[in-house]
Length: 419
Image (tube, rainbow, N blue to C red; front, top):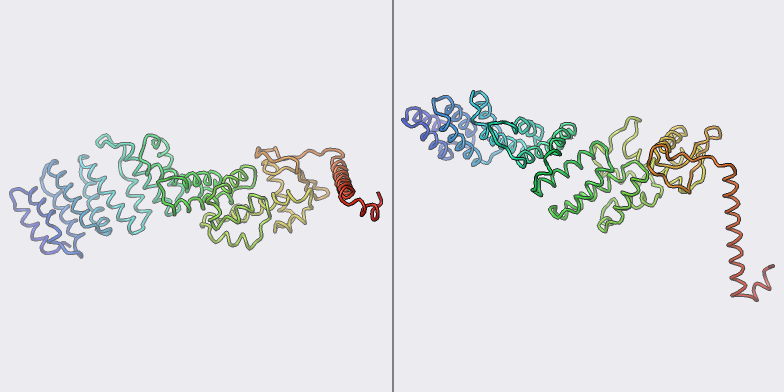
């Protein structure tokens, strides 16, 4: 309910010969008449009265502009939401489409109010209802991008990646026409966050890393996005593509200052990870990065198992199912399934002997990442030839040491060694 002073002023407006000027004066002086407790009701009562009369479209447009300026002047999130939403309802009841520009401005104010209250979903819904392709209102691509970026960011705040992705796809069709560096940056960051949420970790890592070099971002934010790039690279499926991503991040001179650098370095050099290291790393991850996958394990646990399997392939020529299971923290069957999947996807080179229950790793050939390229062919006598080569190499090294001793310490060799 409007305060007494505003109600009295409205009664005088109704009897005024020039209602448009009277309404305009009332809105301009509303701060001196209204109270903080009734300002929303006062604005709602005034906007209802304005459209209840017989004013023309030109006068109504002018009054709407004054109403918006007055609403902004109060700079109050709750006032924006209550009075602004009521104004939108009043405008929606009008048969004329002449107020779309003013309605769009009010929607942005209502969205500002919801964002100030951290009600991200309602802010996204208010902005999503804004007409951006109407023939009655000319909207530039930059204005469209600005609204769509806000919608995407609000949906991401509530982890609704499906809705966010819908608007991101709209952005992709026009973002190339926008030169504003801030909008382009927000687009790239939103794309990275959506890829991260959809577990497209390699793409997200590349996007975060690119953003971390942007001069438009503060030093603190650059470090944060670099850290996100490292986290996504670590969570990516083990294989040659991830190895390249890890290598690129390891070479970044800023990386050693990150808390995640120890984990990054170990993964890059294919060293086995201890449970304590993994638990410490998990403390810095987002909820979606710790989500449970279809096989019952978390994203992080799956990434660590695949990494340790890749590390084991660097240490062993062959290993039994049971021993590999102990190394990976799995049972023998799951260790075999994980190995088979990585070989089939071309992320690990090797072969599985299910009769002997042994996995043979092919250390001489790197995985290419192409599906089906990880299968190692059985070569007759290959292991025996490798053994022979190792024995020959050892014998040659012993011979080299003996020759060096003869050159440097001939008396010692003559007295001690039988040559």
